[in-house]
Length: 51
Image (cartoon, rainbow, N blue to C red; front, side, top):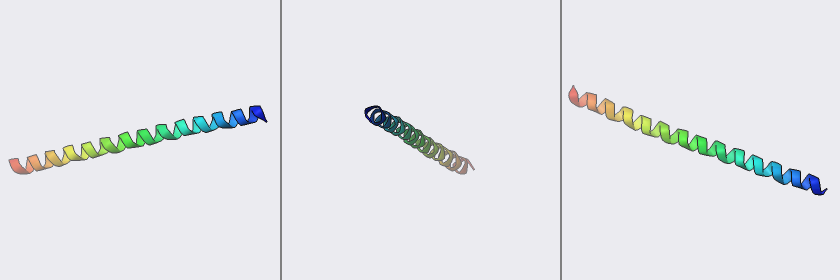
């Protein structure tokens, strides 16, 4: 039982780390998308001003 409990807690820790990594990657991806969208809006408004 002792080794089984140790394996379970280790698996839980690995799962938690994997989930945190995914959340971090998704958060970074969303931030990148937002900044990219802002850049596109700026470029579009700049072109409108030029025109």
